[in-house]
Length: 164
Ligand SMILES: CC(C)(COP(=O)(O)OP(=O)(O)OC[C@H]1O[C@@H](n2cnc3c(N)ncnc32)[C@H](O)[C@@H]1OP(=O)(O)O)[C@@H](O)C(=O)NCCC(=O)NCCS
Image (cartoon, rainbow, N blue to C red):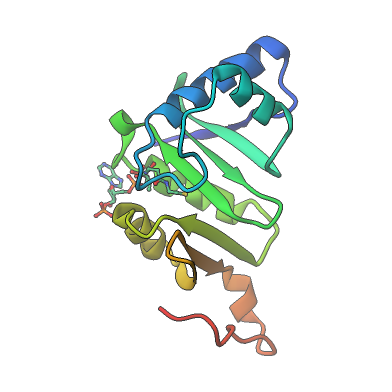
């Protein structure tokens, strides 16, 4: 299925506001297990302020044709966040978006921070080659993905701190 990742940064004000409404709708769907940073829903204005502050290196809305099916971001530390609207879960959009991000960013290491109770997402990232990396006080687990190009070099080996 052809998806497109559309950056929310640099868009004209009305388009940016439309993206913010999509992100706000997505945020309102988050369950306690899925949420690490947001315990309470912010007001829409606070949410827009947050988006305007460009908190991430890139922040995209995931489209299937004209329909927004989810959103993804990558932080300055190469942490990936991926959220699909409930009605579009398990249709392959998350996998497509993740592959796009992994293949179109010139990094060798990516991270995903996931709440320990969010088994579905943990399985999702593991299925896509992410390995268990660390546990921050049982509040979030971090998973790491090493790009294949890293293994192509015989001089580099996987960090010993990584367990499966
Ligand atoms: C985790 C998450 C991003 C995965 O996205 P998704 O779009 O549901 O994932 P996919 O559809 O690509 O893959 C999920 C399952 O659907 C299956 N699938 C893939 N393509 C499919 C298709 N075309 N039709 C039906 N099922 C399909 C996959 O095989 C996979 O099966 P599994 O459940 O046995 O692993 C999504 O569930 C989500 O947004 N969760 C809530 C937010 C969250 O917790 N994010 C993680 C924090 S970063």
